[in-house]
Image (cartoon, rainbow, N blue to C red; front, side, top):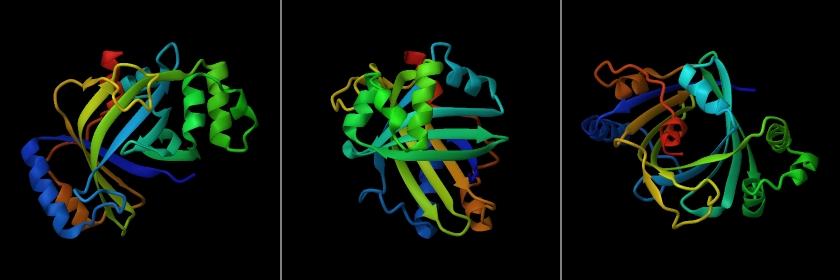
Amino acid sequence: MKFRHEYKHQISFSDYLALKNRLRMLVPHDKYAGKDGKYRIRSLYFDNFDDKALREKIYGVNCREKFRIRYYNDNDTFINLEKKSKINGLCHKASVRITKEEAQRIVDEDIAWMRDRGEILLQELYTKMKNQMLRPKTIVDYEREPFVYKPGNVRITIDKNIRTGLSANQLFERSLPTIPAGEPIILLEVKYDEFLPEIIADIVQLGGRRSAAFSKYAVCRIYG
């Protein structure tokens, strides 16, 4: 299991403009980004009746995890079930490809089929939905501008227009009503393996801003 460093910073709009201009000169966009360098993400997050994932995030528990189903640009032919883990400040993401029909069955809590599948992540989610009452909780929509720098396996993303769906059961409903998740936020994330190249560290330095613990899931949970 490979863990990565991950740092998050809330930035201002002027910071965003300056950072984007610097990045564009030296760092290519992710190959999956559109012509404008962006794509849209919809995620459905899971939690239990006691809001375990939410509480662990708020309290800064050292070893925590959360499950989500995610797809991009309204393309429901490519969907991932993901588990994001954090231990001692380092992050790991495990994922498995699932179909739209399988994702909808999970949303509908029709999960017996997951027990007999060979994918470990599906079996783990099945076990936790059965034993820990993990359930679909919140839909989170946002726009992402991703950059990739191969040395150090660095991924830099800028997320904005974070919105939350008013129903956790309508994952594939394109007309799902959504509302802004509080005040407008622009979130910079920097992820890398063993080292952060100096050139990237210089680009993303933003007037001494400190890394901040920020969760799109936690922000959106205010509304449901």
